[in-house]
Amino acid sequence: MPTLTLKQRLRQQELKSRQLPQRRINMPTFWLSHMMAVIECKSAQPVLPPFYPADYLLFERPVDLEGLHPSVRETYGPSFKQLEEFDKV
Image (cartoon, rainbow, N blue to C red):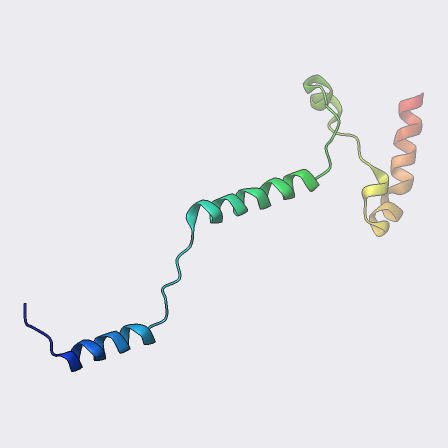
């Protein structure tokens, strides 16, 4: 290994001090924050009431008219009302 002169050593130190520190991702912290973001998104979704498999095969999930877009509600509203009246009979 060659011996460095004082001038060369000072030059190396100067170059090292000019270099930007390398950015490292702290993986445990990164994955924890990612997992927490997924949990927060999942918890923000509405929880639907339980629906029995036999009912799902026969009727599927009931349609919430208030959750539909106003133009869709306006277009299919009379049909939904007719079907509800038919179910009552």
